[in-house]
Image (cartoon, rainbow, N blue to C red; front, side, top):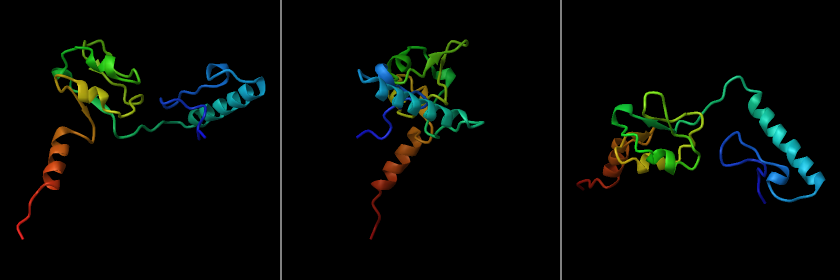
Amino acid sequence: MKLRPVDLATEGMYLCGLAHSPKPLDESLSQAAAAVSRACTLLSHDTVSVGGMVAAVEGEKCAVCLTCVRVCPYDVPFINEEGVAQIDAAKCQGCGSCAAECPGKAIQLQHCEDEEIIAKASALFKVEAV
């Protein structure tokens, strides 16, 4: 049983009716009402908070190889007017695919930088004298 049958993987996107799958009219109408209700819940807020785990691009390191654009399952990265990759924090789901695949290490997942991971791994395997 799916808990949010009209929600897609991308936050704020909803699917209902025949776009979801073939179904009777009454079920399509129920799903449409559910999608409207979910959208109204999101739209009723003055501001929308995003999660802290989002990717950020260091423009001076970006080689515009388009790897991040191709690999992102949510189609978030794009090339901006300055000719470097840019990630919209409101759309980023924090999966880290772009950061993992970036050959120039121009993209870092915030709160998950390389230095933090190395420090955690070092602390985990630190041998203490007894």
